[in-house]
Every structure is written in C-alpha cells, then in structure tokens.
Image (cartoon, rainbow, N blue to C red; front, side, top):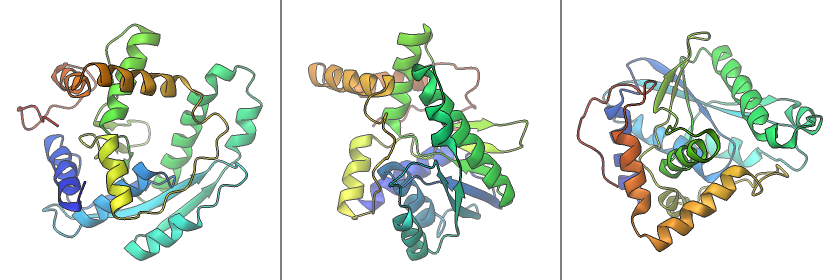
Length: 247
C-alpha cells in the first residue's frame, strides 16, 4: 500500500465519524509495532493539509518487560518532529502475580490503557488515538460472538466521561495486510512485542480462524466488516456519510 492510499483511508475514517475537531491535541499510543508506527506516520502526514488543525504527541507505555528497547520509537518521532513521552510502569510484574492466566490479557489491556490515558491528560491532550485496524474490528466481533454470545465490536470513537478524553481509531478502514505492506514499503522501524503471551491468546486463535475462513471463502473479511458497519451498536457514533465504505 502506498502513502496516498493510506492517507485516503485514514482521512475517510476521520471524516465519517468526526474523529478530529479544530485545536485537538491528540496523544498517539505507540508501542513500536507496525500498527502504531503506521498510525503515527499517517496522522503526522495528515496534519500538514487536513482542514481541521490539530497537534499530536506520541506516548509509549513501557510495561517493564526485559528486552523492550523503545529507542527506535524515539528516533522515529524525532525524524517526524513529534513530541515523545515514555511512561515507565511495573505492569509486567503485576501480570506475573495474576493467578488467573486467562485474565492476564484483559488486565494488561486495562492497566496499559489507564497509564496511556493518564499520560495523555498530563500532556494536556483531549483525545487518544489507538492503532486498531480493520482486522482488529472483525476479530473483536468474533471474540464477542464466540466468548460472550453477542454481536459487537469496539467503537470508532468513544468518549470517556470520567476523564474527559475521547478515544479514536483512525486506522479502522485499513486492513492488516495493507499495514504490513506499508510498513515494508516505507521501511518503518518496528519493535518486537516482548510479552511472553504474544501469539498464544484467544485473539491469536480468532486471527488464525479468520484467516482460514477468508481463505476458504474469499471476501469473507469484507462481508464481516460490512456487517459490523451496518449494525446499530448503541455505543457507536452516528456516521456522517451514510454510504458504506467498501474495502
């Protein structure tokens, strides 16, 4: 995927769900993975010509795993001229104390997001951008169906009343394959996930299931995404453009 196509997808998502307003200050959660690095790059590029003026700052939540070296993120931010903040936590130690192993991922996600949101507030940001892409939305829907018995996926934009922050997901129209292609084409630096549970989670199971379904039924990812977009989830914002976005 080339730069023009990436920015087109991201801008469409921003416009469809009014993710950005004038004078927003957006904290971008950057772990060093392909998704977050692509998100940071796209928002920085859009900042130059998007009709609504906004600022961005990059934040890395260091979970405390050994071997995690975010220097590449800092260098990337310096190249993009994006302010960078690193938050050190002891989340890794807390996870290893967790006796219920099947709850480790949800606990990690909760603690990580909490640390990110607090850092965003300390930097006077009013919005936080997550790097969830189209495949993430589909996988979340399947997780909800299989393990919760309901049809749902996370929202493009969520307002957190307690903190006053708004969460946005600008990559929601970009497939994981396109993210991978973009990262390779433009040689974005990537840091390996140091979590020992990486690749051994329910989400990984659903990811592989989705790949199998799409291989046996070409186009099923697109149809599932259309089903999500067509659903009337109570916590989803009203879409400005009522035409479904086909990818």
